[in-house]
Image (cartoon, rainbow, N blue to C red; front, side, top):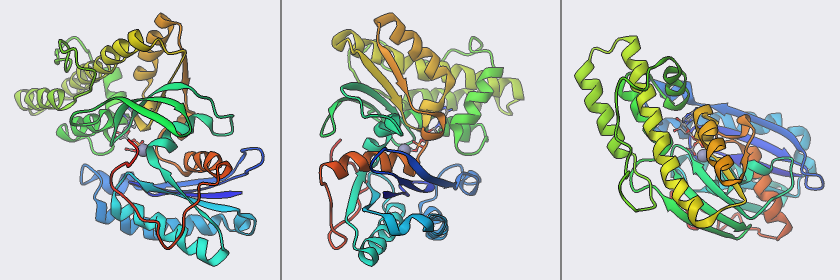
Length: 329
Ligand code: KG4
Ligand code: ZN
């Protein structure tokens, strides 16, 4: 079995995965969302203090499995250094106490592996990763051949939902709140610009929509409930249209047989529907992770670790460190 740990942002999570048959034997997560909500975003120092309390609680729950482990896997990049360190410190303690090798896991690759939890690995695949920290299209040829095809020049897709929600006083995280509000709104009432619409660039940008939302909010303040819903609907429509326009260009060039969407924002039903249509247009198979594995979790870290374990990719407690940036992407 492999024990896996995730603490790259505001979710503390621990999982245990069986090596032989990929079964997820144990999976728990404590989200800090409500703790950060009143600040309108993740406060790194608060997040690390919460991980210091929550991770050992989760490890204690996993105690029945601790004598059967072959390795301990931990997210060590990219993310908030102060929160990554909490998970890495726990992994090192376990490694030294039990004589276990450590598997260092890249968070973005773990999101890609969320597609394969309790399933076989399936490559090649073109993958859209949309989360709070990243917006990118990755050409995944194999375990160790992942190339970024497009990425964001400024804000990420999820972050733009968080910032829109914050501007309307709706708390954190913005994604689920904006999605729910957008269902009640009229997307025709306001027209927001689709970023890079006339640019041949294959890249993403969300700072322009954010500024357009800021102006709308200012113009219509104090916002009544219907106006909030209408802004949410217009924002979500433009944000998704931007993803679609750029991905359509990539589809035309690459004609992918298999396409996947991963990351916290891949839980969005309007995103899923829009891409189901795009994939149908190109005869591409669409792959999505289970809703419970879209946001940060240790199950995906453990699933990536299974493939790393097979390849003997271990590191040492004395040398492993963390990095806020991804070394591979
Ligand atoms: O992958 P994730 O849990 O953490 C990061 O690696 O960043 O993604 C969190 C992000 C947040 O920005 C959150 O607002 C966004 O995903 N998100 C959504 C939805 N659910 C979560 N964005 C749009 N629609 C959603 N339903
Ligand atoms: Zn994530």
